[in-house]
Image (tube, rainbow, N blue to C red):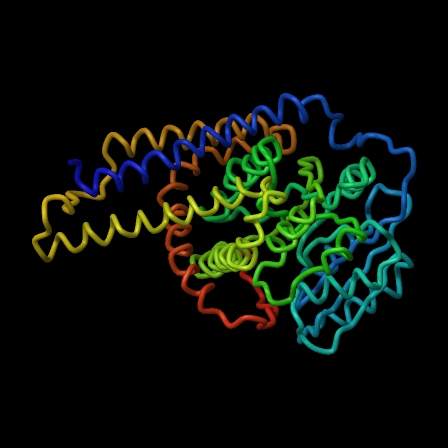
Length: 415
């Protein structure tokens, strides 16, 4: 009989390799069949009609960024749109700056909420105030590319069952190792996964920092949930469970700020991990229905990722225990240092990064300069991802239900 560590190492080794090839094959197929033939980003496809669009920007303590965020939103190459900024009880000078901007720009309207009620509630208030059926939603510190609205609305108007479109976030702050690694992460991990999931079935989530919605679809499912720590994952699952289609549009760029400290990165990834756990617990029972079968692959992929995190934790615990007590041979783990399997994992990881860079040169010509830094990604981000998943599962299970998720100002990097 094989020892337990053999099976643990087998799963820990083969899971990331299988998923990497799964994402690479799906991403390449998406690029060759759907992306390569599309016009350049600056020449979006024509539409028979150009319906009015409402750009929603929920803001909480965004005084340092709000001017450039609003300026980018107002600079859209689109004929008919409005910008609605929702000030969610900010305690800094966000309200004063928004009012001053609204006095100078006719397209801008400001909605003031008297206290911090969370991003989901702010988006809901913005949707109710909007004049359009089509809503483009960005964060209060994001810079929307001038052609992004056209690209996303093109999808929403292409079919009556398209309920949402997710865009392509790009990292603005790259002054540290963490920032540079995140450039590659958003390209080779997040972008590649969205391409593959779009080919194979459903998307796990839209990008909360840039997404567009059909208001009819939102109304059917009750808009965003204000008791979920990640409203973007929840809205994605509920839309798809209601049989709405979610598209991915890599030409819809949005430039964002990301954490560049370990504390900020930990808080962000823990929130993401907890959001996945909460959505799984909330909706997994509903997914047992045969009519929801197209979401089974998304749920299965997520459950495997949780199992992998706890497998890695068990390997580390058994190795540590073996340093202090004599474990049975079937439980003994000699070392955690990478051996031949670690080299193979690193090579597959670099192959995935190289594949994504080839695809992403279309949107960022010099993205390849970050390839060197990605050698550190498995050690840094896989460890953070594993630990946050391990912490998030009990935290999500023990969380009190119907507790409102309110804003917490994030780490926006070193600038």
